[in-house]
Length: 110
Image (tube, rainbow, N blue to C red; front, side):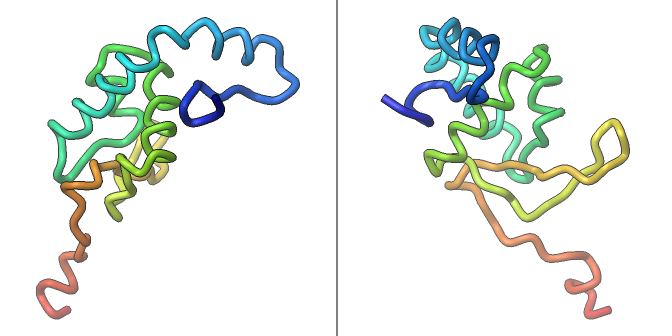
C-alpha cells in the first residue's frame, strides 16, 4: 500500500520513515479524530494550527489532514486565517460542508 493509504515519509530520511512505520496502527483513529474536529468546526473550518490546538496535540494531525485531503475528504474552504506567526493559513473544511467564500466587499457591492 502507498500514500495516502499508509503514512507518508520524507524519502531518504530514516527517522521520517521510522515515524511513519511506528504510527501505522494509529492512523485510522487519528484520521477519524482529524475528520471529526474539522467537521465539528465547519463551516468555516480550521487551520492546521487550530486543528492541533483543538486536539491538544502538536504536529500530529497535520499529516493526517494531508492524507484526508489526498483522499478528497478535506478541502480548502477558500478562507484564510492568520496563524501564530501572523501569516495567512488555509482554512480546511470537509468536502460535504464546502461553500464558496464571498468577501464582505462583494456582498456589499463595494
